[in-house]
Image 1 (cartoon, rainbow, N blue to C red):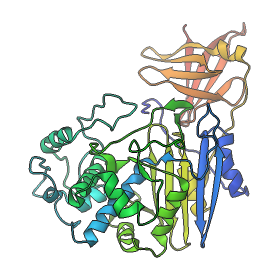
Image 2: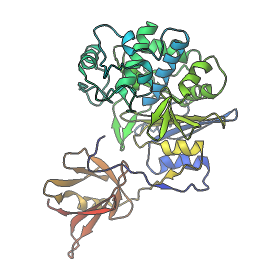
Image 3: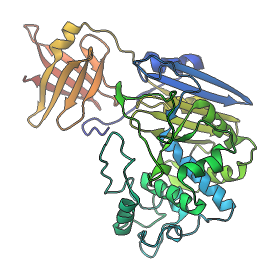
Image 4: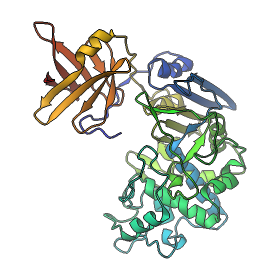
Length: 438
């Protein structure tokens, strides 16, 4: 969801003496997500916490076995497979990526510098976040139909705007391309390579590419309480390595424990953890981001899911968080790894009589070219700004409402005749009044 007039800003608060159980449970109680599953590994012991539902209609509860889309955490699997192949001397991260591509797919260069596999693995390739010819037939399931032919056309015609290796830019295209190279080098599809190289050795039998199998235990995804279509992939999908995996908390804990404990994949995993480049205020390894030297992590998001995976080898501790909403829980993941990291403020919606809610419906003009339409539906209110998608707002009192996707509030005002005639949008310290015109 892209919202121009609303700027994302989390408000943090000091950690309280709440138990871990309470902190996790609140994510459901406060409407952050329909369901959440958290796995915590510390000093040889694993604990799971599961609250809420996998589907709001069936009320099926989430468990440690419930499957979720893990989104971009998939990227760490892609880089791990590349690391395995590098130790088998089937590829070299220092090589130009062009070496592993078909002749018809010509990667751009700039100032005589070629894009290497390491550039792809560390988000320093100079390639954009997404290919500019990415135009899915179904935006609610965007990756299923992006073809090798389209990828070839874009790669072969794109001009880099900066030298490879010069700057960090998170790129689904770049990591998807690395996954595509893994399939060529390994001479197997992405799903088969995943099974051969990672899930089978680690006995992760509930981790696979979404769309490859049908499971009753897959959670339904939601965005702002609205059901979202699953993002599916098949063996023809060429950017699968950027975000195509489905897994559950139990399998993901096997994966995370393997990052910090001795196992057959310890050497390739260790290669991915080493800091190799700057990523803003952090460092980046192969796929993994590194915060404050010790915390290695990645998050993920799809149309209806958010996830977090992180570990701290110095504490022998690992965290997995899976949710079926787009609100996200990165703050909780960092907090569970180190309680010095603050949690974001959570608000619990209050119940407002539907008669009052219906009075707020209408169109409010903030400026001649910018209005907010308020709609009463599904026993609540939603707003839609000019040229923007519709989003829900939640009551903190009878007249004041807040948004979950960004830090902004709406307040409704009445005139001397007690008729609702105005709203005020509060954001970034500004109060923007809007007169009700319809």
